[in-house]
Length: 307
Image (tube, rainbow, N blue to C red; front, side, top):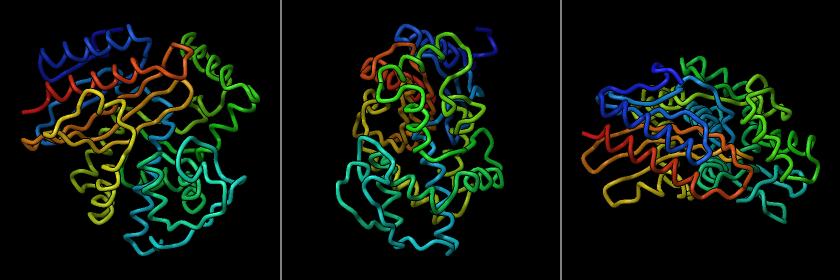
């Protein structure tokens, strides 16, 4: 680690970034953190330009592009989409668990993929809006640091290819790559082939959504609303639960990856965008302390950056 890796707008902010990094290391996490007050520009973080495989965080830019196309009249929010068991992307929530054919409106698919991180819903939207179009649109808006390359299904196909029917082995391989720092045997966890992003890129994108500086206000307003329905509350919200705070965010989880990015708003009107991207060096599927460490990072950043 060099001094340039960790920064902040004040001495307290720099110390906070160092403390978070040390806390993550003691918990078995490697990662990057970036937080910025959207109104003052004050910020803190470390390794903010290091790319990480985004996993389900990629559903946020997909939703933004979808809502932009809806606002432009290119897509109908009530468009029915058929979901058929056996042909849907696997996952632990939502339509991915359905046992019977169903028909869901496009805008409701966006709700499912952001609220419960439904992989089947996300990939149904990816069939309408290919990953390369999402990336091309982001680039057209000047949104750097985020590249969407594949649907969610590709993550599971890659894991099954190297560890058929053995999720424990797939997790161990992911941890080994993180620990050794070498090439990744799972192509969708290799930055060169994967959907990836940086903490700086995500904070910038969330900031532009919150200030209506990207797409159109009708799309950004609806995205803010949808991001407020996230059910997963075990990361940022584990340490930022209070009546005086609201969190609009998206998590991402796959094998040893644990992320969250979004905007925390205080009762005083502070709007603080935070992105925490992490990879665990511990080969365990359930790591509640890692999730709490991400929550502690968000809380510490908000405490320093709020007015």
